[in-house]
Length: 602
Image (cartoon, rainbow, N blue to C red):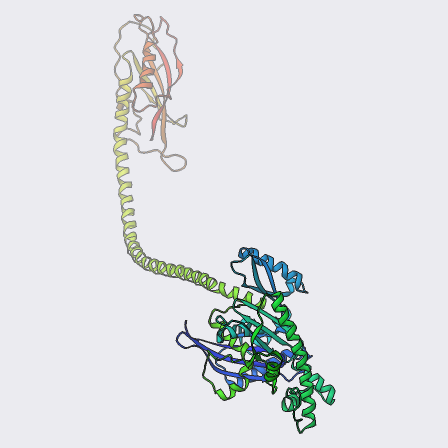
């Protein structure tokens, strides 16, 4: 294991004991510093107890200069309810349910108002299990935790004084190979704790006869205050010897010895009853050794008294037999017998112990649960930060790339803008050239159009038909002065048959101002050139009596216009007038209206 520094603090009724330990894999448990302070309070005053504990611990930290803030705490057995019970052997979950049920029957408070814990201490492999259950009120343990935190310490573990002493005895004494039972008599201020230590068994009991009982009798006998009686008890008091012995010179000492002996006799009677209970109810063996502990056990002749009464070996508890000491031994020897709880706390923090009860307050448990989640919260926060940082780096790099690309594009745009100006000039020149070309092309087309148009018209005209008049139109209206008259009159009387018909000369049919070298281009009312989009054709047809259907040439002419003409819109040939041939006439007239495929300027 790695080296560990921590404090063990025992909160007694009238004293606070602190031991600073160093645990290493090589040396084991080492006491490096210790301190002890009295609580100058009335034993019945709970209101001043916590402030007195805070003051005492703060003074010890300042005086002894303890180097760590981690704390294992031991509380008096008087404020803890301890029960030993037997339950049927079962799996762990059911054992806890049965222990909770028993706790509800024995704890005189609602279970949500107490902190409780348990441990199976015997009966392994049998039909029944021996279980130790302890409980303490939440407000009491929270007050102790508040006192510890007020001086800047951090609570890691809460043990019970008798159970802590039990672990100390098991660590320092060869209990496993002992043929009997060892009894620890911890005589404190308010209570005396009996701890039965036997291989495979544990039993504790508290007796309300202790140091304060003696002090109260001294107060009554000498009619002095409690604190003065307490001082007198330790300055002059001893356990009176039985039988004939020389009285002490001081009358007060003689009175004190008798008071102390009377109280010790009552205590011995309670111890004897507890031993009988242990033997009968817990199937234990009679003690073969008595270990004295606690502040009141230092009264002179206490060991002789119990050796005389119980007729067994009696000695003071030495909790440091297997613990290294790196502190002045002379000072430690004076209080070593009362440091069993402190050493037990040191063992709980470093090694596996026979009894491991922990009464941590709920606030500490919740804080630990939260602290266990903190790494996950921190990891999640780091993940979020890394994600944000990654996105920021991504956007930063993309922005830099885009800025570089934008600079390149900007340069290209500036270069292209220069070319754009030149291109615009070239396009403007191209448009001028195209305009001139279109004008030249139009002029060329116009010079050839009418020749091709009249040639196409002549090719569409049958042999017995000729065009008498061609009137150009714009939007269905005749263009004034533009009619072309080929032959005057609408009909001619028949004189002879087979007269010759001359062909139409296109140049003769063209209006004078449209012929080559004519009078120039006409303009519309809007200033633009007039457009010829159609013609009205007045034609004549030879009334040949040799044909059975004189109208056939006219219909042929119409069909040619609708199907073969290159310039006339085939779907826009309209018959305006169709003559009625008579035998007395050589010819008859007809009138068509046609639309050009593409209008031409006039």
